[in-house]
Each structure stands twice: as structure tokens, then as C-alpha cells.
Image 1 (tube, rainbow, N blue to C red):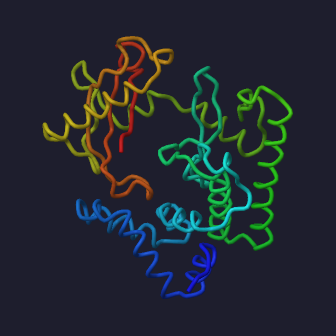
Image 2: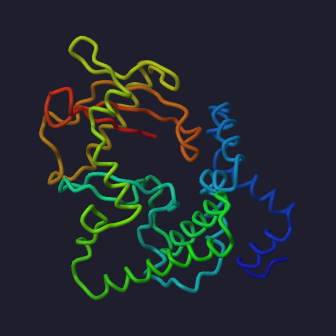
Length: 291
């Protein structure tokens, strides 16, 4: 019998049979309802997860939190155990986007798992993802260890910088503040355009833009369509008045169901919404994803 939560986790890792049972139990508890709703989607999801350790890690966030939430964590206290964390901080949840000031930045770009928790959980999840991704690319153990250490020490250096000043919001990874690989990613992002994205996923029929029919796209029946729009309206209510766009914005022009998305989203009901942009011109329409 395990004497503590940490002992319980250790017991599971040392007993392969118990570990396997725990993995299955956590996945069933998390996904049972969704599996019953769409078993084919989850069959595809689990096949993707079985491809390699990093793919399994990406698709099993629930298992990660089942483990770490039962570990002793000497690095948190009453404050730092309940802070907003990204929730799924792994190496492939980073990318570029345009901020509110029109500046292209490189940053974490996926927040649908954000929640209150230990700040260390983000660090552990990111460090593990670096190790798994490096392992999949056949890097040496020394190179993997060095990569994780660079991540951890860089985090500490930035935290120290924040404690010495009052302008935390001024920190951004931009074309002006980066070099090397991150700078190259930002430069490539400059070449992308909304028109290219719209041209890939939508078409103009008459004087109206709509989603292109194709693999992974399905039209909704009236009930599902209305449910999606109702959820979208609830989302709009959460946007602060100070950040709302002009009145013409937010009008929904088309809605479709989607499948075949990433590992973490596989099996979830997913939709794409085509929304009016800043003006009624067709080139500034906006694409939104909804899970």
C-alpha cells in the first residue's frame, strides 16, 4: 500500500501492469462520453497517439494531470499553486500571431486548456515535451539534457528580469527582439496573408464567401447550426466592451463541422465559423475554430 500520493505514483511507474490499468482508467474516465458519441474519431485519435511517445504525450493531457496532481510539489505555496497556467504547454503549442498593436510576435498560441493550477505544471509539461521531441529526432541524451536545462534556466532568467522592473507587459518576442530560428519563423510569418488563408478554406460564390466543401467538412442540420450560433453568442458576451470591434464585425457568414484536426482535438465536436471582419469587404473575413 502506498503511504503518500508521491508513493502512489512511484508504485504505478514501477508496476507495468498497474500503470497500464491506470492509463486505461484515466482515458476512459475522461473520454467515455465522447467515445460513445463518435467511436471512429477516437479510434483515429488513439492510432495517432500510438505513433510515437510525443504523439501520445500530446493526446493524453488528462493522464499528465492525473500524475502531477498526486505528486508532492515543494516549489509551490498557497499563492503559486493557484495561478493561471497555459495548461498544455508543449513544444508544438508555440507559434506566431499579430497582437492588438499590429506587432507580429512569437509566443504560446493555444490556450483552450488554460486553468488555475501549479505554475510548475506548465514547466514540467514543457520540459517533458522537449525531451520527448528531442528523443524522437534521435538527439543524444546529453543534447536532451542540455535542451531542458536551457529551457529551465531561461525561464528563471526571465522571471528574475520581471522582478527587477514594473513593465512586464513590455516583454515580447518580435522581429526587433529576436535572432536565430525564432527570428526566421517571424520573417516567414510576414509572408503569410489573410487572403491566402481564406483562399485555401473558402470560396466566393456570387457575392458571398462560404467554406469550400471537401474532406473533413460537413454541413450542419438546423438544430446543430442553431446550437453552434448560440454558443458563439455566449462567447461574444465575454468580450469586454473596450475590446469590441465595430458593429459590422462578428456577423456569422457560414458555419461547418470539421474533423481530422490535431491529436489533442481528435474526437471533440469541432466547427469552423466564417465571420465578418472589420468591414464588409470580402478580403478581411475572419475564420474562427470552435470546440
